[in-house]
Image (cartoon, rainbow, N blue to C red; front, side, top):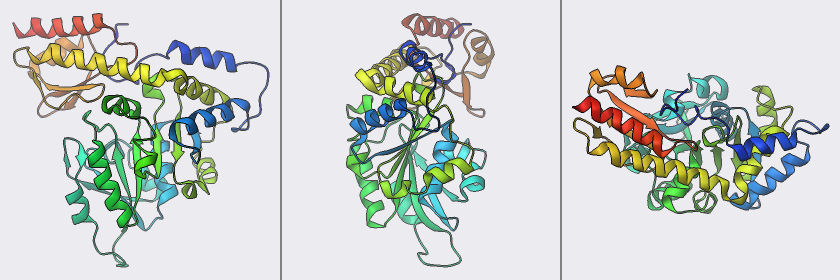
Length: 341
């Protein structure tokens, strides 16, 4: 099957990560995270996020996000997020149902939450009739592929700390943001005062598995019980841990992110000059968003699968991954050119 641009979830497993799983597939090993591979993974995470990081593996991103919120907020408290965030749009109500946390969605600009909107929403403190704001969730990079700058993050997180609010990063593609901004994972999270990160694996070359990384260890106190209750405690944890160890060692995470972002930049440049193609957002990660004529969508998707982001405007999302090739970019852009003629 031809590679498409639907999602980095669609790609296979990176060979080095697959090899790490095969290497872990020996003899017997203790279960539920008490194995040597889990210890190695914890060490690798602490090298990138700091010595106080507490790391727990789960099966998917929804669980990572929901459990992050559940650990930081009580059922009478709420989470601020953007109107287009994955939490608000694509979690099927899981934060409310499984974490019991109310989401307060705020208008976004270029996919980002705005400090002035946070300040307007953060009202009625101590009012027993009103859900109490407790945590801010920032998607980095955003749902439209843009990145919060270091300045933007500092402003929001500094204000959050002044209001005694926790900060969560939905980092399904955090490595791409770090690569784009030229920053380490630690400087993009721990050093800014972020409390908990949903750190993505599946979109970045892993077979499956995400990590909840607590940078505020106090929030991790009861996490193991919440994880078990929500059915997210992996038995053969070594196979998730081995993947993350391979991913974080020897700069593989950076190599994958760099390639994915470079392919997206090449795609953005190639399509931007095509008549009737309108790139709608700055390319700052491994996603390109563009509006194309409605009648192009069907013939184009017969060759390359992708998602229509907005069914009203026909804005499309094209995602690149670790295995996207220059030939994929050539073929896709050529198909667009042929449709424009």
